[in-house]
Image (cartoon, rainbow, N blue to C red; front, side, top):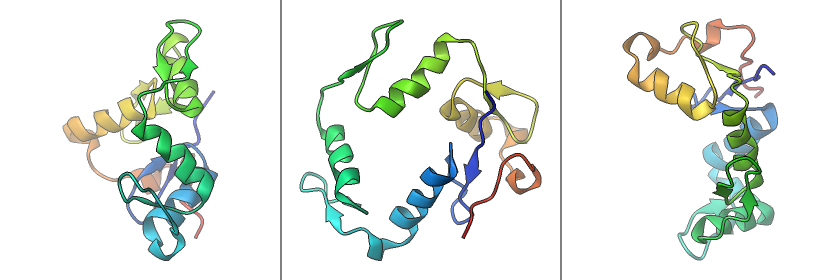
Length: 133
């Protein structure tokens, strides 16, 4: 499995797919679109389903459990990403060097801490599509 990482052209945030990137751009970079406000923290969301998902962040409940190590997660998407850690697969390549990582978080941390990989050369890598405006 090779990840198709998408990059926000406004802030260089990384996403696993174009849908997540489009949602990020509308929610983060277009404040007029965020009409659903969290009563707990005041954060605004594009729609009620996003607000409902966010409300789980204020809970200590972790209903999604890993079948291998039984670690719990608040969201199914976090569990799906976690499962990669048990396969040994490293689908997330650094765009500046040949290293590969088990998670997007590990790759981001590598780019932040490794001196030669902190530059933004992402637009030069063809398999990582830029966002669609």
